[in-house]
Length: 198
Picture (cartoon, rainbow, N blue to C red):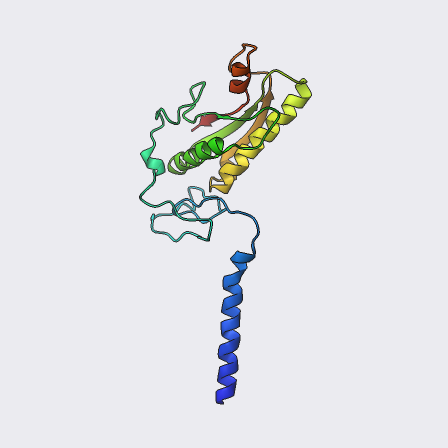
């Protein structure tokens, strides 16, 4: 081989490597935080569960692996008061603003804890129930409850929980947690509840 031919091949290889490395930077959307041992955006099942916590994590500028400094799913007991939900669920309800299905920062933080718990309890299956306060029509609240349940489920999936383990349903305003007609009661009723089986 001639020297110029080798230089051309090396330059072409360097350009190809640079292009591959630049692809993640071109992605405009924010990626959710990755759980240790779970590639970002990938659900895991019992069959594909990582066997060692040292498995590499797809990291980027806004994604980092949760290391030993944070809680692991196995650290969270099902009866942990920080997770305990209403109606006997081991997972706490999350709340929504009036007429909204957008997840608040507090809700995202709670869901991140739930994802850790679900990663360590792989046989658990969850029905995410969307609930609303009593204001509005039955049809409107059923649709809003569905949006809340789906937003919650989708965020858990983005955190690495397998979609096959999660089901979304809406109860609209039909099952209020607090039947009082006060703003405090309305705020309690605008929620996603987690019915855990298994």
